[in-house]
Image 1 (cartoon, rainbow, N blue to C red):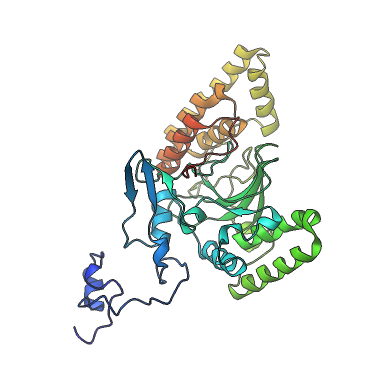
Image 2: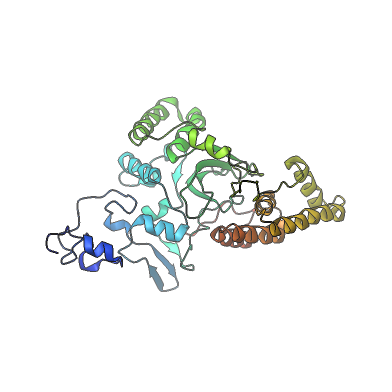
Length: 374
């Protein structure tokens, strides 16, 4: 045992795996920590001491995250997303640009690191339930449950950038942006956050000056090259995913569901997006509302038959379209369709997010902020 390498947690090790205890010594934890390492990385890396805790406050009570948890685990627990390495790489770059306040490093270009980055910057949060307690933090009105905002832009248009996941347990498949005050459509910017920032700068630089934007783009390109990241908006990974998309949906990022060799898993709504939008608009405007509500109910009835035959993607598509359309008259139907679809698809975590979001979202509120007010 004495010849085994020391576990960095020593006697305080939280792991239960027998294989781990055979591989590492746990006799002493004082000399097993690299106190000089301050980088923020996923579990395989060392961690910053001041980023190990998240506190939430309600009245006089405080909830502290266990000190043996590293930022990657905290973010996954609180936000329900398995963040990729490029998320942490951008934080490291922003620490180089602004050591005192990394989250503000891109403010010159009207971009601010938010959402899960608030964990890394040490912000405190309002007390909520434990698991997934921050899944609504920085969630804008039309953000589907698969989307998590990490950058906030111009509030006059509600610009925000974030990651999109096809499955709760998997890492994100793309980065996209939306202008919440303009519409519910998202623009795909690439498959990593560096592509998201780089492609956003193409428009922002026109307002902030080409020189500073060029300098930042050069730094982004260097970091992306080091990590072998693509900066184009349509890299091979996006092209490969596009082949799996069964429906574009109103939000334009599309949905991917499991299909067997005969195509079972998704069934077409048999109505175009344009026709569906007109139907929903007529319902909202009370233009032959009962007639069009009957037509909508007919689609929902066909979805019930589709679910019986394992075509779960049909209900997911309509549910997301009703959610994106954003009128409260459709909230109940959207909740019913989405919670069931996500459960049938084995994505119940998304169902819980959308259910909580629909209970709280308000068109008069740009986004939900769960940080403590100063």
